[in-house]
Each structure stands twice: as structure tokens, then as C-alpha cells.
Image (cartoon, rainbow, N blue to C red; front, side, top):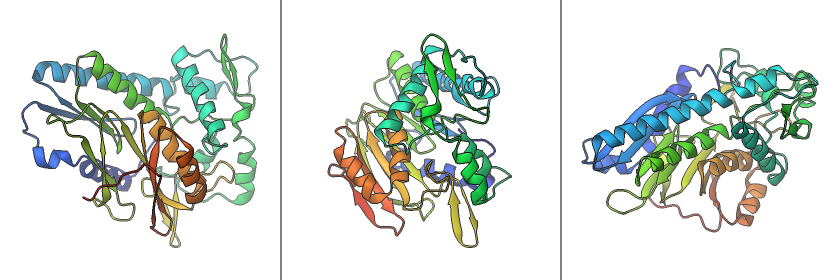
Length: 339
């Protein structure tokens, strides 16, 4: 959930959304019982599609799902001054804990679990590094190493203090939490939950290429999701078929700038403060969008060798890694289909 994306990024994001959901090409917008809306939320285009025999009920469910996504964004976006995460950041360095609702506390708690699980490569205290690079804003730049080294002293998830009764505290006044690596996935999962509550049994939520589906398509077949080619806009490397599952991709083509022929992108290694260099993209299939979102980012930072080993050790996620040289690597259970 970044801020101030450039026009370049918005165009790429829109193309990515249009190419991913391949089944729409064959059924078309006018397919009976197929209802779809788009809104700009979570700093991306969010498209919700519902298959339903009742048009009014479908639109009610979609609107409720969008309201839920907006609610979560208002809690977790650090670029919203009144959000709970912003209030935690604004209170950094104070002795008092910042009280937060249980939902926010639980998300931060799970984030720290993911950090432990991934050996520290997923770290929500990365905010100061994100800010100094300014990628996706009007202030993109390459910070010097001395500046980065100073900021890296602030990037340490172990300094985040949680107290169930009181809230969250950041001991250093310059620390900043950024939940961009988990918030979108969580919001997608909550939107799916709201659709279920409204009686929807077949649906798909697509937030800028991070996707979770509910059930199957109307004809009982899996949803066909295209995986973006990281070096060719509006092209795909293949297709994954999913039912009641999520897909998320992290790539160096989403937000970046070029300088002297070098690509500087928004997925940072918390150990160095530099963009991770060993992958072009990582795609994860998981039971939830939150898991897929987090693991795509973490494995991108891990790099191909460590990332593939990690993937094959997990019981519930599969993935595909596009190495920096363009070679495709797959976890043992990942099934890439032809276009």
C-alpha cells in the first residue's frame, strides 16, 4: 500500500490485471450470471467478480466486499495519518504503548511469526528503507551506503514490542512499520470472507495481480490464472489452475526506476537495504492470499537457491521462481500449464 505511484506503474498494473484472469476472455463481460466491478483501493486496481443467479444480491455482496477492503486499508495504511499503524509510527520512541484493536494486533503478531519463519527476510520494520529510496514517488533516488547503514540500525523486528493488554511500542523514534507486504493479502482474504457471508459460492478477488478465488468457475472447472512475464508487458509465461486458493506474485517490474542501465525496484533485502537482485519474479500458490502475499515477497528476497529449498519444505504452498537470468524454477508440486 504505497503512495504516489507514477503513471508508468499504473499502466503496468492495469495491463497486469487484464492479462491474468484468462477465463474472462472466453466467457466475456456479458456472460450470464457473471458480475464484475473495479475500484482503486490498496493503491491498486481491485477487481471483484461474482458468479450468481441474482444480480441484485451479487452487487450487494461486491459492495460489501469493497467496504471491507476499505476498512482494512483505513486500519493498516501508514500513508493514512489516522490509521492505527500510523498512530503506532507517530508514537515511536515514547514510553507508552499505542493501543490498537485486536485485529491490528493479530496482524502485527502474525507478521513477526512470518519473520521468524523466513529467517528475517520478511520484516515489517523496513519502513525507513522504503522511505529513503522513494520508489513509486516523485523522489526516487539511490541512497549512499553510509545513509543506508544508519537506517539499517532501525530495521529490526526484534525491537517491536507487543503487549496484549496495552498495544504496540517502537522504542526508537525513527522506526517505522510498513505492512505493505501483508496488508493486501489480508484484505483479499477478508473480502472473500464477506462474499461468503453474503451467500456467494463462486467468486474471484484480484488486487493488482494478487488473487484469491472462491470455489470454481460456473462450469465447475478451476480458475485459470496467467502468470505475468516479468520482462514483457501483457505477456504471460504460463497458467496455473486453482480452486479455493490464492496466487500472488512479487516482481522487480512492478515498481522500479532505471539508472545507468540498472533496475532499482521496491523489494528490499532488510539485511542490506538494497533491492534484492537474484530474481525477476516469484509466484506463490497458497491456501490464503495473506500467505501467498508474504511468501512471494520473502522468497524473492531469499533468492532462487534458498527460496526453492524453503518452498519444498512447506506443506501448504507451491511456487515458481523466475531467476535474474530468466530461467524458471518450480517447487515440487507446482504445475505450470501452457497458455
